[in-house]
Length: 123
Image 1 (tube, one colour):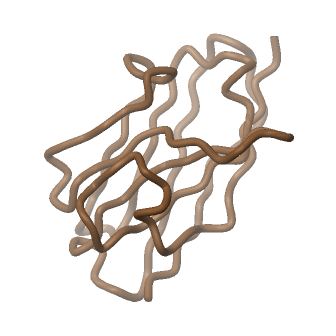
Image 2 (cartoon, rainbow, N blue to C red; image 1 turned 120 degrees about the vertical axis):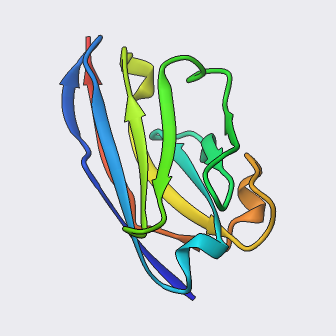
Protein backbone atom coordinates (compact mmCIF):
# COMPACT_ATOMS: atom_id res chain seq x y z
CA UNK A 1 0.00 0.00 0.00
CA UNK A 2 1.18 3.52 -0.76
CA UNK A 3 0.20 6.72 0.99
CA UNK A 4 -0.11 9.87 -1.11
CA UNK A 5 -0.19 13.48 0.06
CA UNK A 6 -0.78 16.34 -2.36
CA UNK A 7 0.33 19.93 -1.81
CA UNK A 8 0.74 23.15 -3.72
CA UNK A 9 -2.83 24.10 -4.44
CA UNK A 10 -4.12 27.62 -4.03
CA UNK A 11 -5.88 30.59 -5.55
CA UNK A 12 -4.39 32.11 -8.71
CA UNK A 13 -5.56 34.39 -11.49
CA UNK A 14 -6.20 33.24 -15.02
CA UNK A 15 -2.99 32.99 -17.01
CA UNK A 16 -0.81 32.30 -14.00
CA UNK A 17 1.09 29.14 -13.13
CA UNK A 18 1.07 26.71 -10.23
CA UNK A 19 2.96 23.53 -9.38
CA UNK A 20 1.43 20.66 -7.45
CA UNK A 21 3.42 18.00 -5.63
CA UNK A 22 2.47 14.55 -4.41
CA UNK A 23 4.66 12.88 -1.80
CA UNK A 24 4.49 9.10 -1.68
CA UNK A 25 5.40 6.73 1.13
CA UNK A 26 5.05 3.01 1.67
CA UNK A 27 5.29 0.85 -1.40
CA UNK A 28 8.28 1.46 -3.71
CA UNK A 29 7.38 4.57 -5.64
CA UNK A 30 9.35 3.58 -8.72
CA UNK A 31 7.22 0.44 -9.13
CA UNK A 32 4.05 2.48 -9.59
CA UNK A 33 2.58 4.31 -12.53
CA UNK A 34 1.22 7.66 -11.38
CA UNK A 35 -1.53 9.99 -12.46
CA UNK A 36 -3.20 13.30 -11.71
CA UNK A 37 -6.96 13.64 -11.73
CA UNK A 38 -9.31 16.48 -10.86
CA UNK A 39 -12.89 16.95 -9.78
CA UNK A 40 -14.88 20.13 -10.06
CA UNK A 41 -18.05 20.72 -8.01
CA UNK A 42 -20.95 18.76 -9.42
CA UNK A 43 -18.80 16.96 -11.97
CA UNK A 44 -17.23 13.54 -12.23
CA UNK A 45 -13.55 13.03 -11.48
CA UNK A 46 -11.61 13.35 -14.72
CA UNK A 47 -8.13 12.47 -15.82
CA UNK A 48 -5.47 15.12 -16.23
CA UNK A 49 -2.17 13.36 -16.87
CA UNK A 50 -0.30 10.11 -16.30
CA UNK A 51 3.36 9.09 -16.21
CA UNK A 52 5.11 5.76 -16.50
CA UNK A 53 7.17 4.17 -13.71
CA UNK A 54 10.49 5.54 -14.89
CA UNK A 55 9.00 8.85 -16.02
CA UNK A 56 9.87 8.52 -19.66
CA UNK A 57 6.33 8.27 -20.99
CA UNK A 58 3.42 10.61 -20.36
CA UNK A 59 -0.22 11.02 -21.33
CA UNK A 60 -2.39 14.15 -21.14
CA UNK A 61 -6.06 14.94 -21.36
CA UNK A 62 -6.81 17.11 -24.38
CA UNK A 63 -7.99 19.93 -22.12
CA UNK A 64 -4.54 20.38 -20.57
CA UNK A 65 -2.23 19.30 -23.38
CA UNK A 66 0.42 21.94 -24.02
CA UNK A 67 -0.25 23.70 -20.70
CA UNK A 68 0.43 21.07 -18.02
CA UNK A 69 3.51 18.92 -17.50
CA UNK A 70 3.58 15.80 -15.34
CA UNK A 71 6.91 14.58 -13.99
CA UNK A 72 8.31 12.49 -11.19
CA UNK A 73 11.46 12.20 -9.12
CA UNK A 74 11.80 8.60 -8.00
CA UNK A 75 14.75 9.43 -5.75
CA UNK A 76 12.50 11.81 -3.83
CA UNK A 77 9.33 9.69 -4.07
CA UNK A 78 7.53 12.71 -5.48
CA UNK A 79 5.16 13.36 -8.36
CA UNK A 80 4.70 16.84 -9.84
CA UNK A 81 2.23 18.69 -12.00
CA UNK A 82 3.35 21.97 -13.52
CA UNK A 83 0.32 23.98 -14.59
CA UNK A 84 0.71 26.98 -16.87
CA UNK A 85 -1.74 29.37 -18.52
CA UNK A 86 -4.37 28.40 -16.00
CA UNK A 87 -8.02 28.96 -16.88
CA UNK A 88 -11.09 29.29 -14.65
CA UNK A 89 -12.25 25.92 -15.97
CA UNK A 90 -9.16 24.34 -14.39
CA UNK A 91 -10.69 25.04 -10.98
CA UNK A 92 -11.07 21.73 -9.15
CA UNK A 93 -9.73 19.51 -6.41
CA UNK A 94 -6.64 17.81 -7.81
CA UNK A 95 -5.78 14.26 -6.78
CA UNK A 96 -2.71 12.16 -7.36
CA UNK A 97 -3.13 8.43 -7.74
CA UNK A 98 -0.95 5.33 -8.00
CA UNK A 99 -1.37 2.23 -10.10
CA UNK A 100 0.40 -1.13 -10.24
CA UNK A 101 -0.76 -1.40 -13.84
CA UNK A 102 0.56 0.30 -16.95
CA UNK A 103 0.25 4.11 -16.92
CA UNK A 104 -3.16 5.21 -18.12
CA UNK A 105 -5.70 8.02 -18.08
CA UNK A 106 -8.34 5.52 -16.92
CA UNK A 107 -9.12 6.26 -13.27
CA UNK A 108 -10.28 2.69 -12.68
CA UNK A 109 -6.66 1.57 -13.11
CA UNK A 110 -5.64 3.47 -9.97
CA UNK A 111 -6.03 1.87 -6.55
CA UNK A 112 -4.42 4.43 -4.25
CA UNK A 113 -5.49 8.07 -3.99
CA UNK A 114 -4.44 11.13 -2.08
CA UNK A 115 -6.82 13.42 -0.23
CA UNK A 116 -6.66 16.14 -2.87
CA UNK A 117 -5.59 19.77 -3.03
CA UNK A 118 -7.82 22.65 -4.12
CA UNK A 119 -6.88 24.75 -7.14
CA UNK A 120 -8.99 27.83 -7.79
CA UNK A 121 -8.45 30.02 -10.85
CA UNK A 122 -10.15 33.38 -10.88
CA UNK A 123 -11.01 35.23 -14.07
